[in-house]
Length: 579
Image: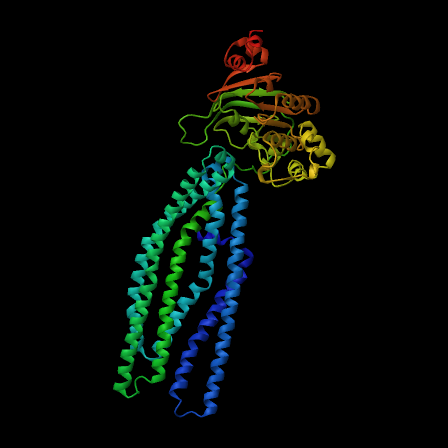
């Protein structure tokens, strides 16, 4: 896990190395100060003013040098930690871009967002503490112990007696808190998922007047997280009083034993200056242990975050582009051979089974069927959004698994029912289909998709600014813009997944007419609920329970008197049905 996330340090290695170097120099200088102070105090009676001034100058120089090292270590620590966090977010985001649909389903969108935000921030804070505080505290502890033993070994033993008690207390606190933080992060994912659903579906929430329900659901989730966090913080809060108790007990013992030693020996075994420096070293030792406990707390919080981040970074997508994959797609022909498909290995029944189908390049194929009949699942296998469980899918006579993934998907355009428009102008959205598309090409594609009709009515025309998701245009207008965007790719295969459901029948007919006249060589697959959207197709597939139940032209399927005939009768008037 640590090895995986540390790969993201990259160009910030120098800052990460310089931080502990300056910390080490700062600690050494801080540990020298009490020793010189002891010499100054013990020599006050016999030293001249010049000697005292010399000691003062040395102390000032060391203090300012220590300050400089502290400032530089803080500067480099901030640079290293923020850069590390930026690289982590970069690596996670780029890794997610390679995920297949199945991988996104596995992690969930809300969980991936939490990992890129909350988890990365936790790791960033922990990293900064590790390269600075976690280096400073053991060095401060070690140097202070050495200096204490140099001054008086018996007095130094007082500190060593307290350390085991602190270590046991810290271990118990960490052991109790760790499972709580694991539970908290799972609840964070659920809470973020609730927020995401609410915001994306806010129109549905308002139309059903479910604001109170959503607020109550959010409040319950938020309260659940708060309770767990409060419980964890209460346990962690024990850390400070335990540390303070040990510090003050140690100082009391030190003062008592030290004063007694000075009086009984007449200052021969321990001097006043040495006692003063021992008190300083004692404070430094106990503060370093206290700071170390804070590092452990932060590491406990961030350990689960680091594990979740490394899960994403180490994850290998289930869909990968083959080495030296084929980049040329000969034509838009499609062939399904003995295809079966399951979304997960543990699924009791396949989503698709026994699919055998041959589609010639340039044909128009209609796909119809009840909700849940796996119409969308069927077409998602063509651009290899999922891989078949059994059998093979070929495009242009080649198994889709042998193609370079980018080349395959560039040749297959999919327009979903709920396709997404991004914030920006209409032109900018259109150029997702073709980055270097000219204004004329954009306008032509929009005419084919019957989108020019409403674009021309807008004052800004193609410079009209779309809100995120295209929320400032209607559903039908969104669908037409998405179709136009797909046409700009000049695909060999065009798939419309119920993407004309929000347009009227006249516009739907005009779009299909434009397809026949303008892109006759492109294979067109049209998923629809309306018979009118597919009745003029070269072949119509009727899906039922993950299988192709019927196959043929409109007239053939009507004559068959099966599922297609039932759908037809339900959608047209009795007189037409009789005819």
